[in-house]
Image 1: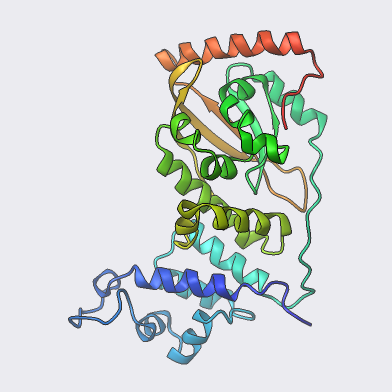
Image 2: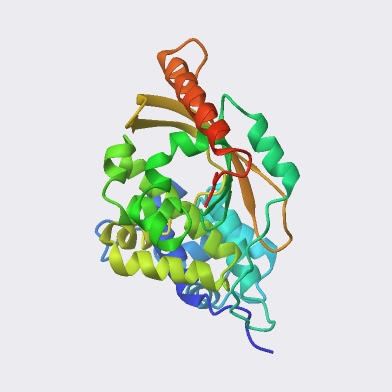
Length: 302
């Protein structure tokens, strides 16, 4: 049997990066003065995790297949991994277990009518469904209006669908639309990194990462940082070409639609009683009018 995924480079990069970010003081060790490299030494991580230096060195070189959950837990605690980072480490270990190494292109999942009905019922929130590659696969009318710069971007037209990662890193207009572009770019890359840990054999995901890494220095630098994001939500500010400045809260929710691909239902809404709510309601009214003119079969997503 061969490995399902040769993800040793990801394991090496992730563990070495996290080890380099810790100081002896952070883990309760005395500082030994000047060090040749930043962070902890491999032997220090091994001692704190309760394993041999040789064993940890082998692990950090990417040989993670067969490692027990208890040992992975010990390494995660020693490296002070966040919950998302711990999940990523376990995903890497799972992907490295023996099995058929099939690098497949997952078929796009059809959005059930009940999900589209749910989206359409939300008239005062921008609601959409996205997959783990950050493709937007279903929307309501307000999403089409709010994210018009994304849907109408050249990269969306070229690829036949809207993708947050391509928009942020390949369309210069994203810097004008999103107020805090750096934060949006960081989160987007971290979400893709987590998805790569879950589905390392997804050919479309690998092609997307390869495309962004080749074309965008900003993405390539962030990808090499091995930041991971799984659970997220918060506030985002936009400079909308029609509605003006908008500060909206957003929250993604897991949406089980397939056993083979993860999907999220994300809602964007405004704080009640604010100017942002007034502007979002105006945008919703405009979107509803446009939707009625287009009819129920109008093009609401790509």
